[in-house]
Each structure stands twice: as C-alpha cells, then as structure tokens.
Length: 239
Image 1 (tube, rainbow, N blue to C red):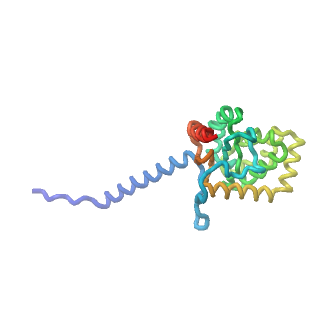
Image 2 (cartoon, rainbow, N blue to C red; image 1 turned 180 degrees about the vertical axis):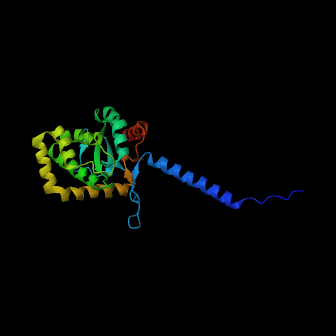
C-alpha cells in the first residue's frame, strides 16, 4: 500500500495568506469607494465620537449655508475641496436634495470644513470663507464651481491663478478683489474656524469626507440619494 502523503503545510499557509490579504484589500476598496478617510499615524489617532450625532446641536452661526434659515431640518455637511468622493456627492446627490428639500424650504444645508488632504485643501477652505463673507448669495455657485474644476488630489491644481479665475467668473472682479483682501487679512481667523469645524465633526464621529449629519443620523461617504432621503424624511417626521 502506498504510504499517505503528508500535506504541504507551507503551501497551505501561503494560500491562506493570499486569501486573507485579498479579503483585506477587497474590504478596504469597498470602504475607499465611498469616502476619503483620515489615515492615523503614530502621533495622530483616529477621531472617536464623543457625543451622539445630532444636527440640531451643530454650530451653525457664521457658517455658510443654503436654504431657508428657519428650515425644520439641518443637514450638516463636512467636506474637503480635494476629496473625489465629495465631488461625486456634489454631482450625483446634492442637486436632487436641493431640488426636493432645500428649494421647498424643508432643509437647510450647512457647509462645514474637514480640510485634511493637504495644502490645497486649506487654501480652498480659506477662500470659501472669504467668498461667504463677501457674497453669501453666490457662495454655493462658487462652491460647486470649485468641485466642477477639481483636479487630482495634492497635485497643486488649486493654484492662486486657478482659484482667482473661478472666483472672478462667479463673483466678478470687484468682489474677487474683496475676497483676496479678506484672505490676506483674515487667513488666521479662517484657519481657526476650519480647525473648529473639523474638531466638531470628529466629536460627532466624522472621520473623513464627505460626512453628513441629518437629524440624529450620521451618513458617511458618497452614498446613494435614497440613503439621504431616508435620513431627511425621518428627521422631518420628528417636526
């Protein structure tokens, strides 16, 4: 009788390792397909929620927004102007939310900064606040135009020339001059406001972009319109 062959343990271990690695990669890809998240380092721990998500508790004073100021539901929206998933959200979801809920006076969208992807993110966030302080009525048009012209992350696409061209196209030369003056004189103040937005979001459990709180629901990533609709309808039902 031929003796039984011993299993090749090395091959089995290698095969198992490949399967596990593939599973990890697939899981990571599924996560990254929806949101741009903070990558923790040895000195920068992942944000951890310290308070329950509740858009009625979000600081809105002085923050850019669109919609009726007295709308029953607040949609607090953390984003980074370099985030490709934010761009997807802007193109595929936000227009429908604006049509169905903002234009009808049911939802106010409050724009919050979560600038963490690099220097261009900080620059664009600073200009965004200057635009809001210069002409609030044109803020969303400017905001959308920046995402429409978004370049590849951290390639230096958000040059002063590019930002000024977009700003001039939306606001005109006179108001663009006011924007640049505000950036020059209020940069430190705007940075403090941006940092406060990010810290506030982290406290609610936002650890990447886009991150949205509607009522008491936290919606993470560029999710389908139906998920936002469910959260909005649930919040409206409480009023």
